[in-house]
Image (tube, rainbow, N blue to C red; front, side):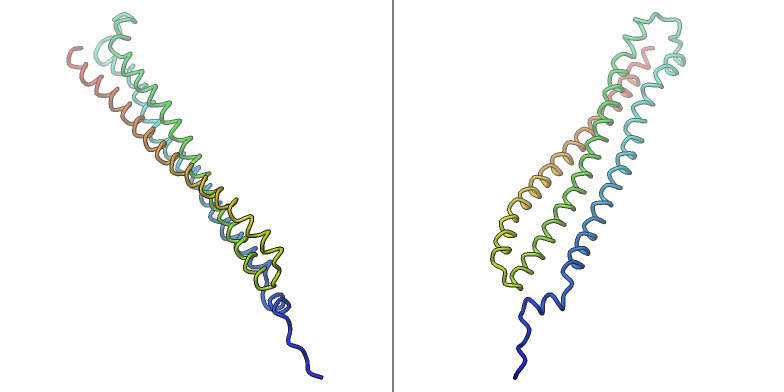
Length: 193
């Protein structure tokens, strides 16, 4: 009596740790996701530090500049006429800096979400391969049917990443331009004071 060779399914189950493979895939993408989330907070702090402090410094500097040019004795309306527009630019720059920080944070959060979606897709592909090896057509068709949903989610996330990236850059530059505009207006009006 000759011994039958093991079936392909039994051989695949015995010689390959499918659950371990899926866990390693998930761990890899989870690490990517965690790194993206850490970057989101660090970069948002950097933007807050630079854009917001820059515009806040411009806004706070109005009082010393007013004192330096001897405008303390002038009326409130006169000082508002001189420093009102630059103050509005600095306030707008502060608000834009906050929105830029929020957009950057959201962008990196989308990167983290994309890493998790890629994890889902990689695990799905491993399961599709497993279903082919184990010759399980019902399971294979169920898995293949899930693929477009995950791919659509991934494409949607990539689109959000692109738009938050572009929006954050535009808003960040607008914040910097508000600071420059306020400072240039003060510098332009300074000789006439």
